[in-house]
Amino acid sequence: MSFSRVGIGERAYELGKSVLLLSALAIGAKAWNVDLTSITVFDVPVSHYGANVLLGMLGLVLWVAWAAYGVARIEQTIDGQVNEDTQRTIREVTKSWPLSALLVLTMPLTIFVYSAPWVLGLVAAWVIRGETLNALKFIVHHL
Image (cartoon, rainbow, N blue to C red):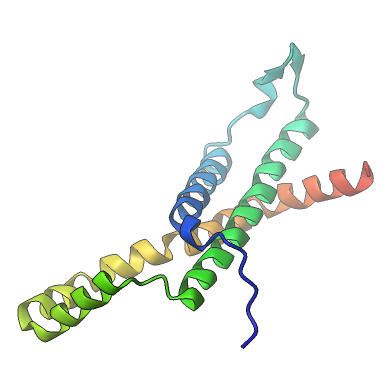
């Protein structure tokens, strides 16, 4: 299998946090209908169209962060970032019934924590898809 190393596998945790933060900002801005027109940049007020483009830019950044998170997780998986100490701990846990039972009981939490950036990133991107498309149109129009 041919694989090109990007080098961001060790940053997957930080990328996951950034996806969660951007998702929270996007969903929060849309859900609470935040008025971005009250923002002034260098004493210039943001227009209604500019506020939508600003939210759309957040959507574009979310898509880029979500894609980078995906690449980092794939790279982590392919590279096998698991070191010898972790492999030894896994072998010890699988040999012990109480620890294996605890592992099974905490599996739903582990699955939630692992899938949260994936799911929330997609939900946030879906929520602000119209603004993101408007921002893309704005960028393409002004190139």
